[in-house]
Image (cartoon, one colour):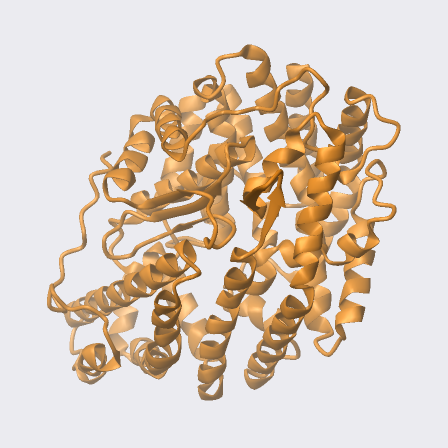
Length: 571
């Protein structure tokens, strides 16, 4: 297995073609639409040519987004992205619909390997069913509006001791021993968010309005039902997600209470406040796993190499190709992502490192996504690489857990290493209630699309407290709690993409259980499952990974008990 990834050679489009405008690529859509398909071989050639066109356009679109998020202050980059959204993407959609119909209506489609093409054709039929001409301009507007979240939040900074910090950079102060400083930073960060509260509320209302109209146009009662279909959630229902919410309350929140009670006792506090959660007792220095972005990358490569040389080679190749932007800076959009690049293959990792432990988990998380990009690059069609997020997040979350075995690369001190592992396992548990809150909030948002910003805040607070622990004290901070949902970019940029983290975290814990018994077998299962891309159903992908696609209360209880036992072993 090699990470020496090669750009897919073009056979249909000229090698020097770039997507400068619609006129550049329209002839190739017309060619595909008008071409006669008179045999199984002609159908296979047609599919490969269509895949090549999709890959070239996808990569162009991704680069426009990458460049814009790396520098939200450059208006030309924003204009380039908006140009694609408004002038190119809307013109592609009617052709995509017509090509999909041509595919499913061709008699030669039945001659394709039905097992290999099952998930692809299922997805194509779904796209045909959802397509509406009147939704094309709405899609274009949504693509532009969604990116405004990064523009607004990318300019957020605070002053600390005469220096300017992004909100991501400022988060390191929450590890300080100085409780007054922690509180000061917490209030400054939240006050800064409140400055743009109205603008972000207005943006979110506009997004809800357009998304709701998109669903109504397609014949759905609400956007939630439409989005479940669009996301290809063939293997579970909204009722399954409701059961997930209840299971989190039943089997996870008690463990969260235990974690925060222990934190409170460790810090010798009468009351645990939200700015205390990341702190350590006096005399314990904050974890500093690296000093620079380059050091973070080099140490991550070493960790990945110790797991499997191929994993390390993936990051080395990306570094050689300048496919990483790691450090936080002003004018950079918040968050982190791994952006697959369909034609050249090696993806792009974007993140906002600020020398914290959280940055290590972000790096190995996005590195897990990157490995899946490498493993699926050789699949025959671009659409085969369109894997479900419920397995994509297993790739990233399992890597967080696997990599812990080699975190001595970041921490030579044994006590620091133990603390880092504790931090990770606590996060594995404490993330579940937040996932449930965000997901349940979205169900309410789109079941009630005509709500006011005030009703939205009230509902958020209600759901937030429904899944909250009983240790952290938020009294006097109500205005910050009310606004807490605005920090979750998924609500703005990728609606309903969040429950996947919960489902995948269960899968990741299951793989880690395997790893504890037989590391090589677990890594084999991991690689084999990820290599399938989107060519199998979710239950089949999980089965290949040696897992059950199961987020029942019983399974959640078993997995939580396992994580709790592993945490107790560290004590």
